[in-house]
Length: 548
Image 1: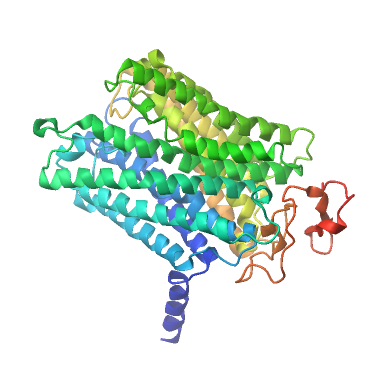
Image 2: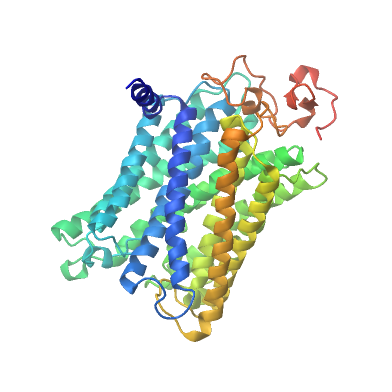
């Protein structure tokens, strides 16, 4: 009985905690469980497509599987992965604050995420849903499967979680910076989270209203999107993509912020072009609201609107390219440590570049007509979302893992897992560019024999990638129990989170941290006693050489 009461109190101390670090860890656990579920759906899909004809599931089940895979991975994994888990844990510590501005709202946001996730999974008990993760009308209002309304309600709730998190981050950045931390002394990860929060607050209500309208039309037949009752199904696409293209940057902007930290810290070199990278995050946030129409080139828009959206789409490449070129300049002549976190950062640059360059084809009007709704779009989307956002998340997880849990992981296994993930990912999705360019449509259960070899290679690649992810889970879990105790600063980072213990105390800092240039590595040196790096006060670090 005593053990039961102790266990109950321990669980309650987590479930009702106001500590941003514990909330970040709970988000992390939820995201990783969702990633496992969404990944299993993906493996089922790829196994079915390993050869023409039926392999393991029937067509109706296949439609449900790829819809659930998309919905889980977008709404439960990629969107909340970085802001919810790493952002919640790191943002206040990077600011030198004790917590976020509204701790109770932060906990409420997590509880909303749990409720939304439960409703999304409950859709399976109502027969599933097979609309695709985009919920396109009229199919989402006409399909006979009963899971549409529960999942729409779940995503509606998840939207409020995202809005409250963004609001919390904005107020925290504005009101809780310590003395000496000006806007242009903030780590670039905070700039990225701030720009992301702006998108979350401004764009997410559009999705919430749109899904509410779909639910009302499905239940009450009120004719908003049904042309038989005077509605317009293309209106849904405008509403949906006005949110969902900014949502792409809710996924990718925090990832870019992580890469800025990883590239600088693990090459021990001051970030190149700090101001340009910071402003480019805000520029991407602004541009994200102006390009939703490039998803609708084949939906009947006027030629003038298609041309305008195409031109603006190309302009988005400018702030993204600024980041990539500045990262490469930072690496130049840096003291690069090819540890696991840095490998994921370098992998991100490679994969994001492919994702960006292939986006040029989809932004070109005459080419997009041929490639629209083919596997080329599937490959592009995965290179940008999974190959970039998720890879950066895993890199950031390795970077801050010692800080979060106070334990070091096995670097050798980390490098092996990275190779498996990187190779498996490219084998899986680069093949799909060729499938799409040859005309293989997306979402199809069966296909012509001439596509069989490409699908076989893609499926084998997915198994290799899955092996890398399972290996990652194994050595990270192992480190929690058997890993070497982590020093306060294992990587030689300069930002404030590396000036507290690993893991941080309840109020984050036992002594007031020194606020300085968070990318000035002259103020960092190796300590044999600590078996880690130590940050020297700015006034004492004038002529120190860079850390190696």
